[in-house]
Each structure stands twice: as structure tokens, then as C-alpha cells.
Length: 227
Length: 227
DNA sequence: TAAAAAAGAACGAACGTTCGCTCTTGCTGT
DNA sequence: ACAGCAAGAGCGAACGTTCGTTCTTTTTTA
Image (cartoon, rainbow over all chains, first blue to last red; front, side):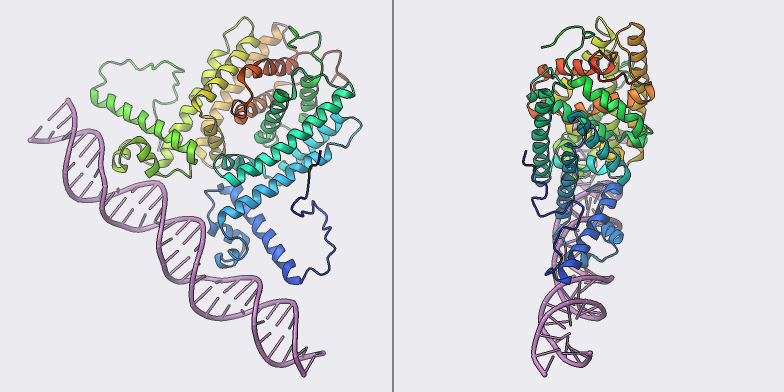
């Protein structure tokens, strides 16, 4: 599968780095970068990529423009950094897919964990923003595409395994099946159902049913066998 | 603001207005408004709501700022008018739901027609843009909510009818079922699968299966009965 | 020919970014 | 261990540009 989580030397949540030999200077620098990114996320959620001004971000981060520009050469570079970090968070879904008794359990666990994460951090709107930006910004778009590519590989892997285990029997080839699965997943995340008052716990059996009924062999109740 | 391009007395697809007694002046005025809206859509798809400038729109519409501002008092009013017109187009889905031998056929026809329409007009990105804008702009948000409300009513109606006809047997109450259905539908439209190389014709059986398997009674192949 | 429509230069505000300057910091030689 | 200092970090006014919008003038129309 080859995922390559942490291609650009990221540390998913532990601070892995040997810590030593990294000068204090570099350490502080990293902390400031994180501060700016966190502030930017807040502003972008509040006002959108285009709508949020650098002054707004400076205010939120508690620093002057001059200071901020020592860490990022432009507003666009902040947007790109945020898209990139969002991509990594999404990929964390995939790393969870191996957990659970069956692949379907793993799949569900991964999705539910991500839904909870998005809702807890209030970063749902950022997803919409990134999607819109990717329509126009080449760098952001290729970032999204990279992410999508990895999802496609993981889903293909998932389908293959689950099929081999006799758990599912998809009605169409991966070529159409996977894009539909991804579109459905995006829709669920986009809609931020938890924000609309649907409890995440109510959602789980619903989504499990959606996944299973979609991927399982066509049952006797179907009007006709499509394939 | 307020604009009120023929109020919210929606005329789903006919142009209700009596037509008669509308002077040539008013006629031209309406034509100009449409010209501006069409040009704006193009620009907004190309550059986004915030990214497109009024000068860009003027250029696309082939008129000067002075002229354009005779028809719309502000950029925001254009955005709102477009959101509103988009809402009407969406609602056209609902009016098609009655067609077809069964309610499920009607449902599918409506969805497929909308997918084709979105793809043919290239207005997919506009949907993303409106969604992002609705997170921030009160007027656009309430426009989207109005639309959503009508969808919820229609879906509830659909579910009731289909259940009564013995076609479906949902596993959850409308309260969670409908939001999930809408999220899935949004995901499908958002993703603009046709743009990604999935042929719409391949999509149809896929989506039909998705709909039917999601709404039908849990079959013997399910690992457990959820309800 | 009066009123409506269109044009396009011009406006102030706000934007992203830069610049000159002042603090602060962590390394250095002793 | 510590004073001295270069370089990094921070500041905030100011820059040039571009934005949405307005205003004055000219052209078109009924």
C-alpha cells in the first residue's frame, strides 16, 4: 500500500524526534510556525481563505505582520501548509483501517474516528474551504489529488481483502465503485451531520448499514441483478 | 440588498409572469440582469466568489461598472441572486420526483437528471462555492436552509410513500435517515464524478443500488439485524 | 428632447507585503 | 561563569496595488 505517512518528516502525534542536537532556536521557530498555523485555521474557518486578512491572522496569532512574514513568505504559503497538514490528518484515517476484527470493522472505526475528530476540532468548514480552493489553486489541487490517490489505493486494498474474506461482493468494478464510495464519504464529512443535530452515535449503525448494504451481494429483495 | 428577483414564490420552471404590459424598457432590463448573472456565474466558477472582481465580471458581461451597478447594488447582491437561482434549479429535482412507474424510479430519474444538468452546464464548482459562502454569509445560508427544508419535506414524503407501497423498509427514523440521504446526495453532486471520468451511465445502476440497498429491508446476508 | 442607459475615470478603503528599526537571545572567548 | 555581541525575532508604520463602488459625462432610446 505504501502510504508514506510522514513523507515530509512529520511526527503524527508523538514527538519522535531524538531531541538533541536540535538547537533551541530551531525549536522555537517550529513552535511559532505551529502558532501561526493554528491561528490561521481559526481565521480561515471564521472568514474563509480569501476573506481572512493577514492582519486578522496576525491579531489571532498575537504577532505583527513583520514577525509573521519571517515564517511564511506569503498568505498562499500558509494556505498550502494548512492544506498539506489537513491531508496528513485525513491520511490518519487510513492508518486506522487495519484495526478491528474484520476489515469492515476497521473501515467503520476509521470513519467514525475521523468524524469525531472533525467535529471535536470544529474544522469541518476547513474541508469545504480547501475543496473550493483546490478548484483554483494548483498547489492545493495537487495536494488533494495526492491524498485522493492514496485513498483509492487503500480502498482498493480494502475491497480486495473484504471480497477475499467473503464479506462483500461488490456489484461493480473498482473503477466506478471507489469513486462512489469516496463521494459518499466526502458527503458525510462535508455535511458535518453532527453539527446539524444528528448524534454521532446514531450515525454509526446507519453508516455501517450503508457500507455493508452497498458492498454486500445483491440480496433477494433487489428488483433485478444489475451484474 | 433584498433584490427580490421575483420573490420566493418559486415558479419551478415556467415563467409565470403574465407577460403583457411589460414595456420594452422592463424587458431589456430583465435581459441585462440575466446577462450579468450568466457572466457572474462564469467568473465565479473561474475565480470564486471572493476571487472574482467586479471588473472581471464587467469584462465578461461586456459592460462598464457604471452600467452594471444600475442593475445590482453590490457584489454581494449578485452572489445572493446566484445562490437563489441555484436553489431554484435544485428544487427542479423535486418536481421530477413524481415521474416514473415507482417512487424509486422517480427518485432516480430526478437525481440522474440533475447530475446530467450540473455536468452539462459545468456549474459543479458553483455548488462548492455556495456551500463555502453559506458558512459565512447569513443571506446565502438562509437561502440554503430554505432549500434544505424543502428537500427534507420531499424526502419524508418519498419515504412515506415508498414504505406504504412496500418498496422500502428503512432501518432508522427519518430524523437520522434523511440527513444521511441528503449528505450522500450532496457528496455525489459535489464530487462531480462525471468530471473525474466516471461515466454517468455507469453511475446510474450504481446509485440505484445504493438507494435501494440503503432503504430496503435488511436482507438475510446482513450480519445482524440493526433494528 | 427629456429621460434612461452606458461609459470609464476616479475614489477611498483595505489588502498583502516590505522596510527600517528596536529588542531579545544564545553562542562565544575569556 | 559571565560579559559582549552578532544575528535572530519582533514591531508597526507605510508601500504599492487592487478592490468595490461612485460620479460625471456622453450616448442611446422612446
